[in-house]
Structure formats: C-alpha cells, structure tokens
Image 1 (cartoon, rainbow, N blue to C red):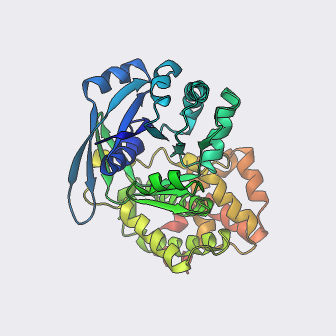
Image 2: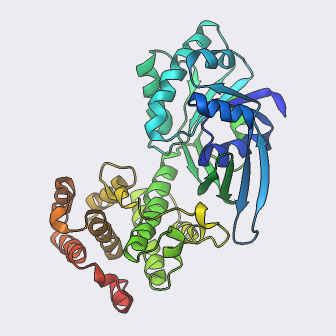
Image 3: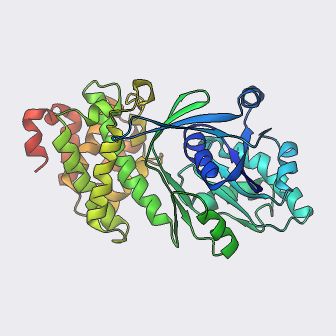
Length: 385
C-alpha cells in the first residue's frame, strides 16, 4: 500500500464499499473510512475492512478483501488531523443524496483549518451520489456551511455506473462491470492522480454521461420494476427474465436510445446507446446474484415522481420533443397507474404534467393508465410496433 497517497471515503455501503474501496485498493491508495455514527464507528474498528464479491454471467464469484488504513468519525475535529496531512489527495462521498448536507457540515470547517495551515497539495472531492453537476452541487453545500471552504479544491462532475448490492454488514456483492466517469479538472497533477484509479473515464464534459446514465439506464431499470410490480414479481431480475415482457423491454431500449440520442445532441452513437441499454437488461437479469442481493421492485414506483432524479429526465423528454416514442409513453403510463393505483387518485402535479402533452400522447397515457391489461402478452405485439 502506498502510504504517501491517501483518500478519505465517506460511506461503506454498496457504492463506497463495492466500488470506491476496491478501486483504491487496486490503485494502492490507502483509504481512510469515515463512520457516520458512533455505533458504525465501533463496528468498523472491530472489522476494519469489507469483503467484496463480484459476479457476472461468466464467473459465479470473485472475492476480494479490502482493508482500511484508518477509521474516523464524521466530525470536524476528527477530520482535521487527516485533512491537514499533505498525503490526503482525494475525498469520496457515497452516502446518498439526503446525507450530503451532513457530510458538508462536517467537512467544510475542516477544510477551512486546512487552508489556515497552508496545506498546498491539491485536493479533489469526487461526489458519487449521481446528482446533476455533482461537484458544483456539493461545492455549494460546502460554501453554505463555511464561506471560502472550497478555495483551491477541485470538484469535478462525477458519475458512477455500477449495480452494487449490499448483502449484509461488511460483505458486499456487486456485478463485475463498473465505470466511474469524471470530468477533467484541467490541473495536470490532479488529473494524473485520478488516472491512477482503475475503471475511470475522464471527459472534458461529463454531464452528457450523466444524462445517458440517468435518462437511459435508470429509466430502463425503473420500467423493469414497474412491470415487475404489475406482474407480481418480487425482484427486478424476475421481471427482466419474464418471457411475457422480453420483447417489450428490448423494444423499449430502442425507443429510449433514440430519445437519449436526441436529448444529448447526438453526442453518443445511436448503436452504442442501444447496446448500452440492452446490457442494462442483461445486468439486471444476472443469474448468479443471490436472491437477497437482488433489487426489490415493490419500492420503486416512486421514481416516477417529477421531483425525483429518475422522473425528471422522462418528463424532460416529453416536454422537449414533439414526436414521442410510443413505447416510452406506454411505459410512463404504466408507471403512473402503478404508482397511483387509480387515475383519479393521482397527485395534482402528475395530472398537470399529463395535461401538457399533445392530445395523442395524453390519450395514450390515460388509456393505459385506466386499462393496464393492455400490456398482457396477447396484445403486446400490437403495442411494440
């Protein structure tokens, strides 16, 4: 382990433990894990590491034990000792969007102390919560907590694409595929350090890749979940492998790929988007994932909400394009029906969104929302034409 380069990691869950820690381990960068509460701190002291098992369709498992260099608590006093050490060059957050304000509240004062002690080594913060303009988003939080705390700090847009599944405390099962997209900082030393990490893709503008991930992968995964609920399946993998919906899902990929192709100003090759979308279905339907590691479908209809990061891109596609793919309209309608149970029980904001659509699209949504049995197998072929 290279003790001369260290990274602070907020979180030990699916993404932090399943992606970040193995990545640092492979790059020989020593991880310092931040515990978010005293109980978790005690647990991590007793077991300073995570077991990560990777599975895919070719190998049943490939396990790695990833040790921590140190474990500290999430408060400014504990963070100062490490942030004033010039060996700390990277900070990762993977705690979930709702927990970012608490992280900023602890981190910002410690960054101010770092400035006062004139620590000159570059510091880069990588926010893996998959929010739009993630670096700028978190930078604003830091500045709200302590003005000037981001001075000299690099905060590029970061996007992680990996299906990680938390099995139980200290042990994580994840698929073999992962990619972390990071925007170029423009500072040679920092970009060179980031390039040491495996499975990293550096881009001048990472926002397009965020659009691709959220608008395509998340929409497809959510569609699988909605179908799973409708078909009374417990896990998304069960829905993805259901013969009744296979043709519809692959047709949906083609439609969504075309929409994302236009949404991102044709940045990506259309064939690559289709391949990426089809791989998403295959990744969800991984035969080697144990039952308790699969994602449940029953809690996912809330992704339809226009205020959530999954719902907004779909609404944006409806608003920005005059010709809407029929399959996308239908799957959106299915989500509306499943999420709200009855059309007349929908929240006002959903009804308002429907009212904005051109009449043919509006009629398609209402028809399927009132009669979801249209997705039954015998009528599926007509729907996907």
